[in-house]
Structure formats: C-alpha cells, structure tokens
Length: 108
Image (cartoon, rainbow, N blue to C red; front, side, top):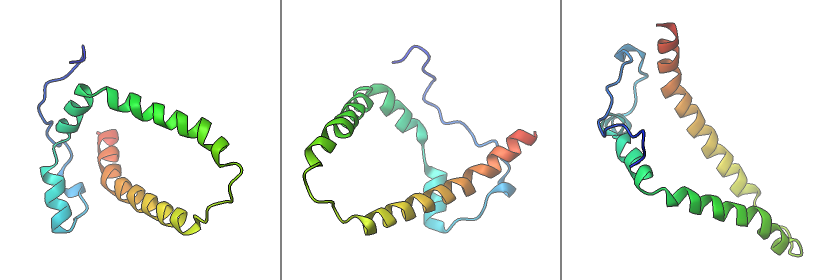
C-alpha cells in the first residue's frame, strides 16, 4: 500500500439533490451504486499497469511511424468521425454531471 493511502470507505455526496439533472433509470441506478474506491484500490495494487501502458505508448509513438512510412495511407475518416462523436458525447455528459457540483462548492 502506498504511504499516504486513505482507508477504503466511500465518501458521501455533499452536493444538494436539487442540483442533479435527472437521468434515465438505468444510468441513475448505475451512478448511485457506483463505488469508485474499488478502482482506486485496484490502481494502488497494480502499479505495473500504467507503466506497461506508457511503455506501449512510447513504442507506438516512436517506432510505428517508421514502419508505416512506405505504406499507403489508411482510410480512417469515418472511424475518426465516430471517435470524435463519442468523445464529444462523453465530454458533454461529464460536464453536465460535474459542473453543478463545482459551482455549488465554489460558491459555498
């Protein structure tokens, strides 16, 4: 365990319920039952995963372009459009769920 590890207890939500934007039932029940502490504990016990991910990323960034320089370009326009759409939807959803908390806690 890391030297400054906190105990594995979920923290209560400190934002008033009137700030929440209503969600459809499947998303609401998932959000209410989500326990982020499980992911925090997993990240603390498996520090090798980010090290492996960074290593793979560096290999891809510095060596794959050399391997692909003599090949014809891939046609990825549709895939990139779909990726950008998913990122946009995720960002909008995240903003809708976090900005009310931020504004409430900054004003109090």
